Image 1 (tube, one colour):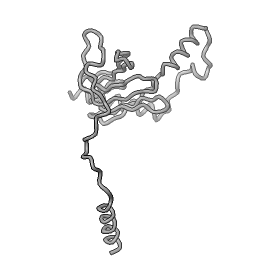
Image 2 (cartoon, helix red, strand yellow):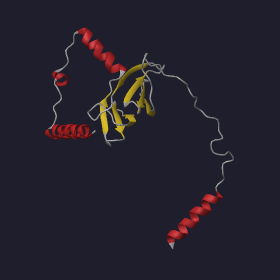
Image 3 (cartoon, helix red, strand yellow):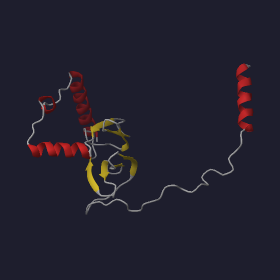
Image 4 (tube, helix red, strand yellow):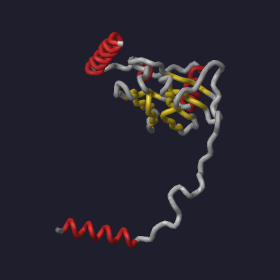
Length: 173
């Protein structure tokens, strides 16, 4: 009975609130369409775009789900780099669909078909410039950053399982 009373009170309050005079979607569109904004190299094509994200340094990351590639453009629309291909192995995609970049510059790409998420490390322009300057000056990396990353046994086993699963799926096709 108390729940019914709360529901009636909520509905009565909602009906008493002033309604907006403008219909939904009647306001001007704050966005503009930029036809053929991107510039691909000769012979390259754009497939179907399923997701877009923009990094703080202005790079525009586009998921081309038709070609299973991630394409990175500068803010002028020039293709800087692309990654990925069709497949089950790390760095390959099967129905690349979503993309996000977190505050630690990890690129998270979701895929439709195997239902997985892949995570990559994104190097910002500032990091790349600092690394270039370090190399040009002849400065050596510290031992802690030059040693290869060690994988835990669980991570190695997980990779072996993923590789075996990919081979099995490839053999089935």
